[in-house]
Image 1: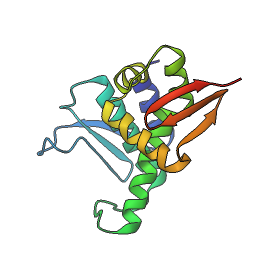
Image 2: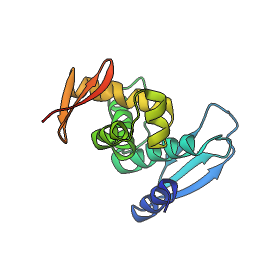
Image 3: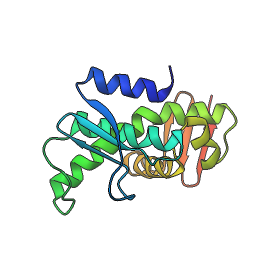
Length: 154
């Protein structure tokens, strides 16, 4: 099963329906409202589709009410929770270590290996840096955020 198929199944299992839609604005890539996840039919890569769908599932699972008005602090917080869910589902510390162990040495290679957009990976790495500080230990490795690097420790 592909990651996209897994995400669609996860959405269905949690009570959400996923549909493709042509939005009037090309800037809109995905939206979530009342159990419906709409993903733009103009997305160009599977990495983009997976990245957008995961974030919208994150909103389905973590948000309540209309959070479109990002001038409100509570809405921004809910937006971040949905994004963090996507980061952890698609990347996580385990994905970073796995990509390193498979030979990935930069963000481009890591995004390719994980099947996500470079933009989503960059956002996730920044959020992990904010959460963990300069570095964190995971599965016998130390992950450094700036510059990105993984070091095996014994």
